[in-house]
Image (cartoon, rainbow, N blue to C red; front, side, top):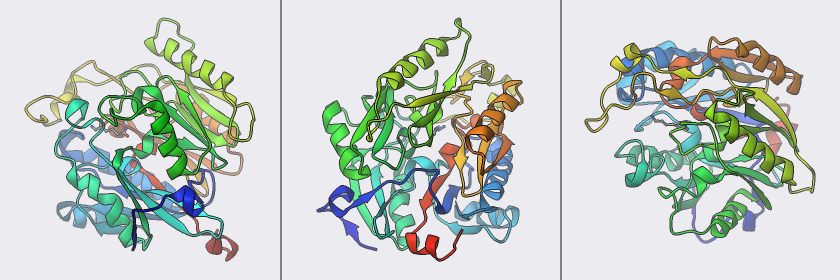
Length: 374
Ligand code: KQY
């Protein structure tokens, strides 16, 4: 594995493909952190296993587990899912596994962004985060991929969404937050995204989902389902604080043009009713630096937009809510060639994210595609 420092993906002819393009596989991390996941992650691990199994039906899945959890992961996951021992501070593969880029010939490389637990010492969620921050490089080594060193720029994978045709979606709330790259202007941040993701247009949404502790990652509010098509988390309830937030995002999308000059078609994806954490659930969480990570009644950032697109399926969360089925039907209509699989995801949500946040796709190499890999 080469560590590339004096060049950028864009200069080398690489760009980030869209999630709906063919994949080589998916990376996940086995959860165990006791201030993120109730009872040391017991229920979350079961939900992660279901997600991994659903994805592994159509692509390779690699699950990273600590030494302490290795035997358990190996026992709970089926044999066709690869388990590797790799230490981490938590289990958010989307945010600190590498972002992958691909060139014309199909060669795939990784990007190693800086990671500081969603805001570092300013408003980050835990300390330390050093093991998370080393994962991108370790994974590129494991997968035999050259890696771009961009650790001087703080970015999580969940804070970007691309269409694979030159357009990137982000939120101002996250990318301009003080805990990320406070010394950089919006223009400098945008230029960095252009250079590393190989995009020419960045669409800035003002915000994300209410109370999303990532400073409102885009992957919880809006996602590309095809070029020039997105789903947007939506509520018709004007008394809900989310109403104005989703509406402001809609306005930004209506005014935007993508890299090919197209207008964006917005498909509204209903939100579940507000999901709040119970006293009992809080009781199952350890303190983080002497402070509780959740308080009873706190609203969690539940959204159906947080789905993963695998080669053969769309794996989406369910919240035991009347909107579960409506959201599933909308996604099924938008992805007619894939099976939409809904997985009860409350135990993942309590950790602070959902299915998109715990998965990172590895794009397919072109030779594999033409060689009939799919
Ligand atoms: O990408 C995410 N949604 C990660 C959230 C981290 C929460 C830590 N408790």
